[in-house]
Image 1 (cartoon, rainbow, N blue to C red):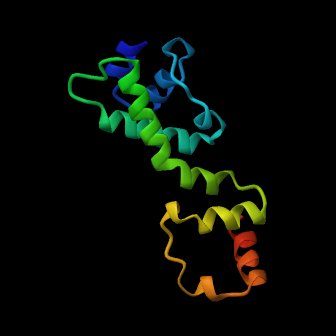
Image 2 (image 1 turned 60 degrees about the vertical axis):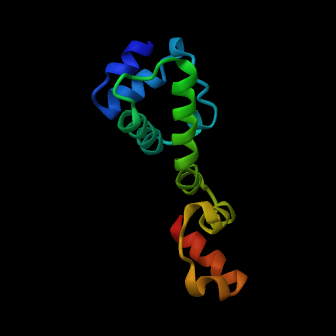
Length: 118
């Protein structure tokens, strides 16, 4: 399976390779994400693959964990299924949104924005 990861040429095939149980990656949080977020992680793994490939499972797991961490804030927005979760996701500093005047709005107005984003 590691050889497959090191020879894949597209994000879609990389995603399939990463999700191969035989590879043995810890997919924990990633496995609950939607396909767009999973594809973004696979794309990051493909783009960041060293020229000589990932040398072992540990180096791949490190790269995978880093890609997951980079995508986590966006994935949280995408997974939000109610206004409260959406509001928390949008206000997470890791997402990097510039909230501007929003921060001075009433709680009710902020909740209304979160509900609209859903």
